[in-house]
View 1 (cartoon, helix red, strand yellow):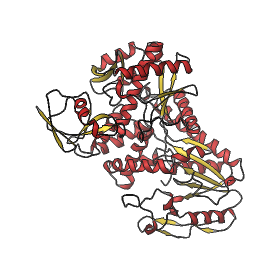
View 2: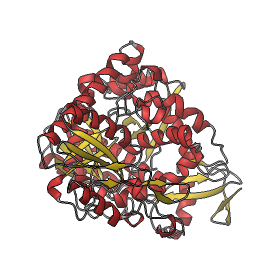
View 3: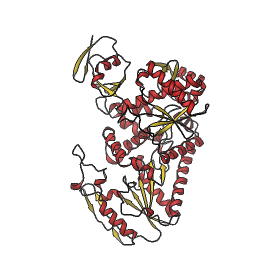
View 4: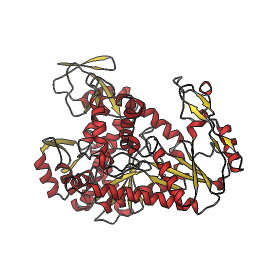
Length: 552
C-alpha cells in the first residue's frame, strides 16, 4: 500500500493505482473535470494515467486551470484529427493545419478536402461518437530516429523536420485508436473528457471552437476578431514567403546559413508596413492624435519611435506622449481586491488632466507636459513644453489608448488608433501552435531581468495578474483600431533563447513557478540559437535584449 495526501487528507492507495483512479475518488470536491495531477513537493505535473507516487502531496488541476485548459484543447485537436481520418481518410488528416487562435478556438485549414457544412458535420458527429466511447489516449516513447522515419512515412514532414534537431534521444507519441501524432504538452486519459467543442466554417477553413477557460463547460457565441485575424493571416503569408512557418524550418535556415537574409527580410517587411501606416496618417490632415495600445511586451516604445521616423519621412513632425505620465498621485490610485495598487485600471489615470491638455494642444496653445516620478508617486513639471504647428502630430502610447473613455472629450475625427501585439506566426509543427502569450512572456522575462532587476520567478508569478489586466483593459478594444500591427518576429525566439534559458534555470524545483519555467525551457529546447549581433539596432527585439538605437 502507498500513502498519498490530497487536500490535507491521507489516502491509502494500492500499488499501481493511477492518478485517474485517485481523481475519480475526489472529483466530487471539484466543480470541473480533473485532467492533471500536480505533485506539490516536486512541483511536477503528471498525466492521469501515471501511477500515484508514494508519500506525495497531490493537487488536482481541472479544465478551469491554465495547464488543464491547455491539456483539454490539445487533446481535442487529436480527437479532431482522428475524426477527420475516420471520415475522409488518413491523407485528409495529414493535410490539416492548425494555424492560430480565433475567438476561443483554433483556425484550421485542410489541403485535400473541401471544407463545407457537410464535411464539418460529419467530422463533428464522429468526434461525438468517439467521446461517447471514452477511447483511451495512449502514450509511447520512440527513439528519435524511428520517430523521424514514422512521421516521414505518414507524410507529416514538419514533425520529421522538428525531430531532426531534437537533443533528447526519445520522442513521446500519442495514439488514439490507431491514429498517432506528436504533441507539445500533456493529454487527457481518454476521449470521454472532451465533451465541449464545435466546428465552425470560417474564411478558407474552419475554427475548432472551445469553451472559455472561465466557463469551460459552456460554448460561448462565436465572435471572431476580424482585424486581428487578418493581421495573423498576413503574417502567416510572410512566413510562407520566407519559408519559415515552423520551428524545424527555422532551424534548417540557421543550419544552412540563411538566417541573415531571413532577419533582414523580416525587418524590411516590418519597415514597409510601418511606412504604409505612416502614409495612411499623412493622407488624412485631421489625424492629429495617433493612439497606440497593446498588451505587455508588444514593443510599443520601439514601435512608436519607428513610426515617428516614418511620419517624419512623410513630412510630419511627431511628438511622443506617454500616457504613463498621466497617472493620478499615488495616494489617489485605486486598489484591487487584495489591497494592492491597481496601476492598470482606467481609474489610475488622471483623465481630466490628459483631456484638458490634449484639447489645449489641438487649439494651438502651449502646454507644459508632466513627467510622472514613479519613486515619489507624483507628477513633476520640468519645462517640457509643447505647442502644435500645422504639420505636428501627437504619437500617444498607453494601455488605454483604444478606450474612448480615456480621451472622451477629444474629437474622433482627430484620432488614428493602432493596436499593437506580438502575434506569434511561428508554429511548432502542423498541429502544435505556439501561444502568442508565450512569446510575450519570454520577452518580458528577458527585459525585466535586464532593465528592472526582476527575476524570472517574479515575472512568471506576476504574469497572471498582467494577463487579467489585458483582458479587462486592452483586448475588448482591439477591434476598434484603424490598424492592427503584428510586432512578432519569426526569428526572435531563437534569439531570446540564449537570454531566457539561464534566467529560467535559476528557478528551483521547490519554487511554485518551477512547472512553468520547466515548460518554457522544454519549449526553447526546440530552437537552435541565433547570435544577437545579427539583430539590427532599430529592431523591436532590441527593446528586450538591449542595444537599441532608441531610448527604450
